[in-house]
Length: 68
Image 1 (spheres, one colour):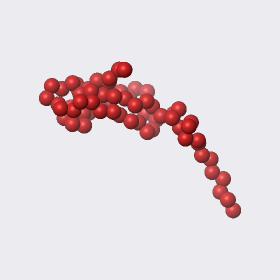
Image 2 (cartoon, helix red, strand yellow):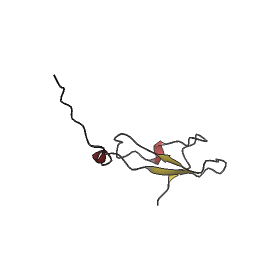
Image 3 (cartoon, helix red, strand yellow):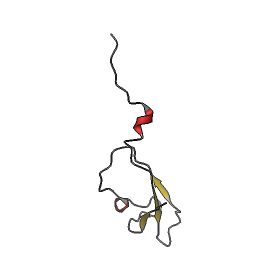
């Protein structure tokens, strides 16, 4: 007996994913240029750069979002 499955077309999945965020670490001795945050799940509205840490130096205070 066939099993009925419901699939979302790939074209509609991007509507529910948050945008990519580009972040810069402004710590003087950090050599990381910038990094991108790609969310693949529904993040809370109040989630922001302040909840992130630099993947290179581990600091969180000098991070800021790059506005294009």
